[in-house]
Image (tube, rainbow, N blue to C red; front, side, top):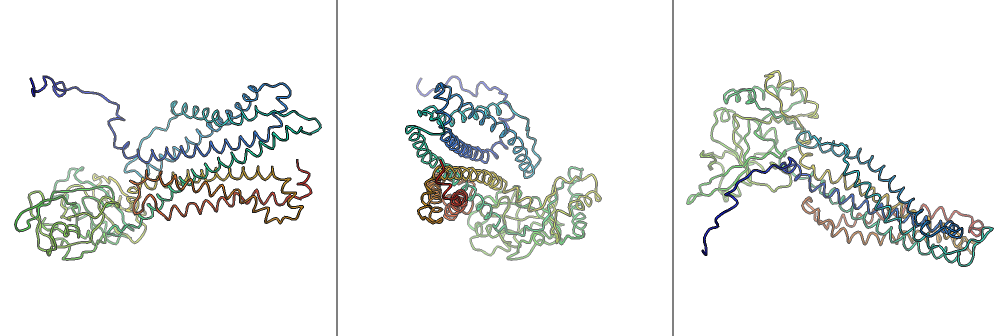
Length: 566
């Protein structure tokens, strides 16, 4: 019948499905997925740079071995045997590289996990045992790259068609073949170096954007003084304290901590700022005609909280010890609260409702960041804290980390049954907040540096080979009166042209690739002009140094020796 409900639905047959814990616990996976995805992208770029470098070096080596291959062919070796020999050498190099890389990866993974665990909210237990699948993937990648980038040199070696002339001479055909190979190699080598430079630019731009983001985040005004601040988490209720005993315990502990040498002031709150902790509640405001409600951040605080945190009170007053002790329904709010809820009315004396209770505003404080540096300022209300767990904030005039043993002893002396859950400085808490950015700066910076080194090696190899192959030409030029500076510029110009072309291609590629970083950037755009200008300039300077070394070495050759060079 039309419109009738189905006779059976999925909910009519409930069932339980067991899944691996890794699929059910998605918190860590979701948190680390984006940085690890970018890490894999950087690894892929470095692999491409390395492959291009190896291909260029293998092609240069095959060009220099044309005489050897011609001799092998003249002595009866088949072309397939020559290809097999070159491929075997390439595969051996690839496998040796994969083995060395596996060892380095094991060490690097340990360092990466140590950094992650040290900057996470609690120690992480991650297995670093060698995995057969990972080793198989590494070996397969090594074999694939060895075959793919060893095939061209192997085919080139098998195509040598010259006949060997005894007494060190060469026939005209062999000479033409060798010189043609030498002319082809710089063109191919230049293309490979262009690719390496372009990929290096992409990674350098990514690292530069993350570095600038990290710098801007460190300069964000948190609304309170983040220096010389020690945070200590405790929970007396775990030791069986009731509400009345908790209040008395906090007052006594605050006095003891404030009296410690090096402590300027001490207070406590329900949550610590900029540690990821956050509490929100619905706030009801009576606007005279109607009542409206919206969400606001909530923070329970103890005596001298705003003085300890150095959050300026802009209007009204702070919470008095008497009000805190009696649990008076008074509160302070921030500027964002006034702007959103009170529509320009004088906030002092106004009231708002939270959880069925009315709270009177006695003061207004400056906006401060609560759970994140990146988020915009949001409405916040500060209410008296009387029970539950707390975070003690200690303002010091010495490095706060040095007071950690003394603080632990003070808590233990007051009641050894009350555990100290965690102790850290405010700076360490902010470092944890910026974990993603700091991790990517380290990884992208390291891979970008490795890519630049590989690109410079490729550029150096290209120019060295070209300089050697043009030794006789350079000797003729210098014998005819050419200045060393002119010869030097002749060689350097070729390398700088490759660097400029690679930089241009890299900047265009980076303009597309950096869109993947949009969600992790702060205060800058993916197409940040400063970064996109600074990276090519930096790479140009590095490329210039790589070009000068082989060029200077060539210009120091005696023209008489160069004229006799074969």
